Structures are given as C-alpha cells and as structure tokens.
Length: 505
Image (cartoon, rainbow, N blue to C red; front, side, top):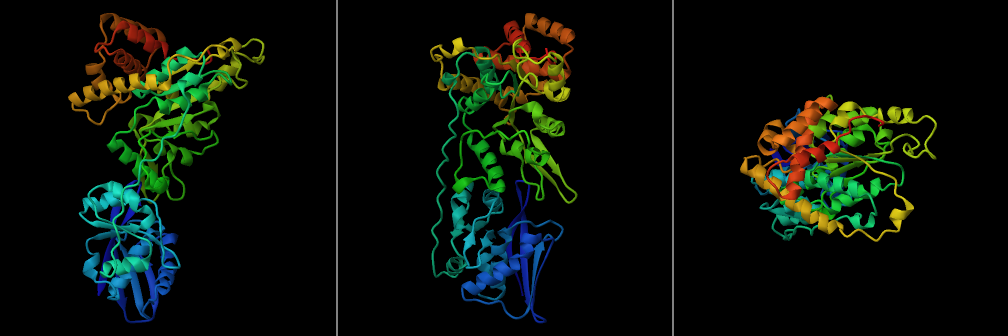
C-alpha cells in the first residue's frame, strides 16, 4: 500500500505542490527518503522516529521508502517532517488515508512530538486555496495562514493532537487572522529645519514613486529625511500587503503572522554583499531589494557600496523583478522598490566649504562620485543637493507643515495616477515612475512651451532616452501634485532641475 500526503516545495515565493508517497514493505528494516532531499529533509527520518516514539507509536521493523514527487524538483527545509509523519501513519493504518486526501500539510516536528513553526505558510495556504484543499500547519503559524481567505486551516500544537483531530477524538478550533502589525515610527518633517528644497523633492519622489539621490555634507539631514519617507507614503493596498507578506513569510520575517499595511523600509549597511542585497546564498533567499518590495530601499553612503553590488540593482530597478540564478534553479523574486540613496559629495564630505574641504577638491569629488556608474546614476529620477544646516537654521521655529499634511497631498496625487492608469487598462501600474514610453506619450504630453524646453534641454545636456522619459515622469508627478491634467512648461522646468548634468559639479 502507498499512502500519499500533499505538501509544497518553495521556488522563490512560489509554493509548488509536492506529493509525499510512503510505502511500507517487507525486507531489511530501513528508512529511506528519495526525491532530491536536502540535508534538512534527510534528517527528517530521526525527527519523525523520535516524534512517533514520544506519542507512543513506533515505526514497524520493515522497509520504509519515502518518495517526494516530482523527483526532479529540489526539496529544501524542515517543513516536510509533518507530511512524512502523517503519510507513514496512514500507511500504518493509524489514520484513515481518506482523511488526508484533501489536506495540504507542512510543519517541523520536535523530538517530543510538538509541531514547530516553519517559513512560507502564507504562500502554502494560497496554494492550498488554489488546489481546493484544506491546510494543516503548526499552531504558531495558524494566524498567518488564516490571511489566505476561504481556506480551511487546521493549526495543530502537536502530532498527538493532530492525530486525535483526524480520527475524530478531538476538535482543533480554526485560527483567526492575526491583527495588523503596528507601523514603524519614522521621523516627522516638522523635525527638519531648513532644507525646504530637499523636502519638496522628497514629496515629489513620494508622490510618483521616483528613485532619488541626495548629495550633501555630513550632518545635513539626508538620513533623517529618508526616515521621514514612510510617514508620507500611502498605506499598502490589500493586494500589495498580501504580496509583501508572502515574501516576508518565505524569509521568516512575518512576526506572529501579523500583516502590516505600512510600506517596507529597508536600510542595509554599505558592507552588504550582492547576495544580501539582491538575494541568493546557499538556499537563494530573498535579498533586501525583495524585502523592500512595494516600499523603500534606502542606501546610505552610496559610494561606499561595492560597485558590483550597486550595478546588480540596475536590472531590478527597471523590471521590478530580480532573478537569482543558480546551477540547479532560477528563482524570481518581486523587487518593485523605490530607491532612496544618500552620499557625501566627496570622501571628506566638505566639498563646498573652503575652510573644511581637502586640498584635492574638486578632483576628489569627481573621483568619489565616479564610483557610481553612469547607468545607475541615470536611473535616478531626482538628484538633489542637500546643503549644510547653519546654526541660524536651527534657531528657526518648527516648519508649519508636518508629515500628515504632506501625506495628504501625496495620497491625492497617487489616487489621480491610479485612476488614470486604470482608465487606460493598466491596473498593474500605480505610479508615474512605472509608466513606460508608450504610456508617457498618452499621459505626460507637455504643452508646446514645455515640449520646446524639453527638446532644448535634451540637446544641451545630452539626455539619454531613459533620462528624457524620467524628466517626463517627474513632470507628470508635479502636475498631479498641483491637480492639473496637462503637463506645463513650469513642470518640465522643475523636473529638469532635478537632473544631475555633471559629476562633481
């Protein structure tokens, strides 16, 4: 007799269905697991053996073969423990095989028979719903699975409780979705004195989802302004929150199954490796750019990052996806992020201050900023010089506008963009920063004066095609902030002011 239990293997955030097949036959007593298992799956034999013993059951002295089908799909992780144990119990006639036919199972077994939490429960629950199955998962991850919607969830604390539930001797209550996680408290724009031009640029970047680079001396407030950005961005939509939570679930970052509506904010250190930033490692986990999906990736001290690491961001910034290529798999992770970067103008940071700048200025600035490749610089919609804050600025009263006031304008501008793209049948595009050339011709055609100004600037500053389109995108956002439908010359002029035409200048 062959007993079967359904589970999943993870490829990126995709949960692929896997059949756990168990056959118990006569012969020399063995316990073999086949089907491309990794070390954690192979070690399931000892955890299953001990867990069964802890609940008063023992493996029969026969040949036990566990096959994970399809056999050519790599299997990684400890979540195969529970489906293997249930399939063995079904083959032993402890559990009726028919009871398991409509369940998808995942969970790690402890030596005492407890069921420990595992990563990826939310994507697994989504797959169970697509297969019209119920889900069996650890009790600790039940609230996470409940977010999947119309899917029956059995969240078991232990193997014994689960067996009793399946045999009708005990009833496990269905879990309820966990409450929303509290949002991260960032800075408030009222805390920033001076820097009105930079704060205006920050508002424009937030309204259109534009990538932004701030260049200024140490202590000018670049990091503080970046920390204020989560407070002026609109919350995630339900669909976006589910996408973000699926990535966090696979990465093990979904605390207590609580989903947040606040946009992610990730700020990796400049010593981060390419695998840490774009994804990879031994098990090809999502990197910082994927954990920041639909949110902000803040790179402070941009020029201190490895150039190869920074250049690995170029393709994901354009496509919104990152592909982790390995010899045995190619995994795609979502990476639709808003890149906010900050850096000093030169190594000493005091390029514009004659009293503090080093004797190598301005050559030091050209050498320092040339660490950032031209193509990556060209992907920045907004370049802003952040001046040093003077003592007089610090004595000024707090600004009149706080983050809530700016957030209201940003929300209105984003709402206009979303309605416009939905009317054009482009529901997947929600911000101007994602509009391509064809869409820009429709939504961001400037008036005659604006068109002439943009054409002259393109010739004078040698704008690339990408740079030309980015000026149009920013101009479209400026018009949305004003609540006007037509892109005017004033919008083109301000958008051109956010382009950096020289390095070190």
